Amino acid sequence: MKLKYLGHSAFEIEHKNGKILIDPFLVKCPDYDYSNTTDIFVTHGHGDHLGKAPKIAIETGALITAVFELAKYCAKYGVSVNGISLGGWVKYDWGSAIALPAFHSSSADDGTYTGCPVGFLFDIDGKRIFHAGDTCLNSEMKVLKEIYKPDIAVLPVGGHFTMDVESAVIAAQWIGAETIIPMHYNTFPQINADIEKFKECILKQGQKPLVLKIEESVEL
Ligand code: NI
Ligand code: MN
Image (cartoon, rainbow, N blue to C red):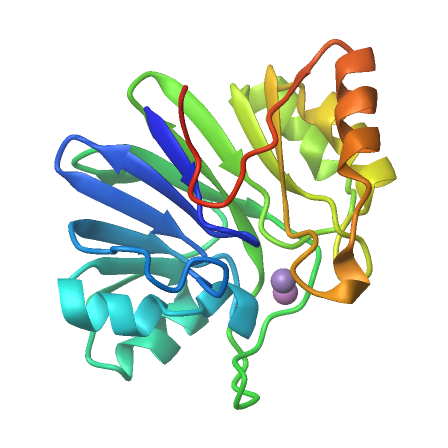
């Protein structure tokens, strides 16, 4: 499975028929080629996560998966949506995904309520990758280790709106994934993070920190 970082909380997962985008707010790579996108997952309604999702879905025909209220908001653009909620695995032809709790808020830029914020766990090509969305440290993360056993965890580390480095290091331990990827940092001044400290602490607790540059891909 190939994962590419698109800046902030945006990632691409490549699969055999195309690619999945998560939270496609693409200010850090405005020229990114989103053709062949089959699916877009949006963790919550905030502009730095919804990003270009409606535009990409209009142009590619990609299916937007999001919590019911956010999916309904996206449907106003005339795109295909899959409204889900916290609950069970949702099947796709490339694998499956499940929405898990995130502790945050969620509304669109026009003030529309967009349901509860979530993180997504993907099961694809024999790997499990968890994208936490925007969240604080919370004990639900221990359920991930006990029940869902992700191989890779992608965690916000920028603080102010989400976990900071210190909380994310604890979250990494609670989630127990082998590889930990930081996100949601250094996009705006409020979320500047000491990523060297993050790497050091993750290594110290026996996990692998993976700090991706913008548009850098990794085979996992
Ligand atoms: Ni947010
Ligand atoms: Mn955010």
